[in-house]
Length: 137
Image 1: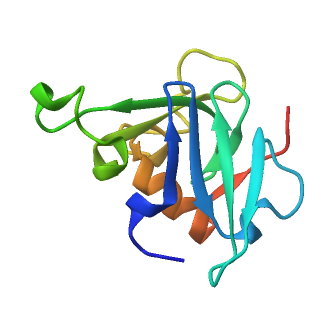
Image 2 (image 1 turned 135 degrees about the vertical axis):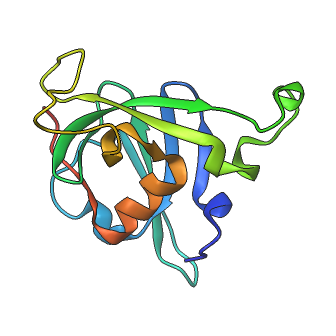
């Protein structure tokens, strides 16, 4: 699999995000809405995270994918920039898995990955196992 994060990001919409990951990421039960496989020299699968449905354990904290926010470095280019061209500017949002509006202070601080994760971090975390898919609620 390529190390270029731009090649691992598919469709990015406000409530869904498709990313390419190794097949081992989807071993067992998971809450990804859709999964598609691709057979070539790199065996990979594309998983779609959907806001409010995809449950993940992010550095030990159980969270629900809540969409993403994209901040182009040059706001004038907002309508012309390719989202996949600079994934480091896309921030993945998570909500507490218990349905709460805020994270309990005892679980996280302001620099915890669950509150400070880019899309590139999300893909890296899924690939490395630091972010684990959880079963459907």
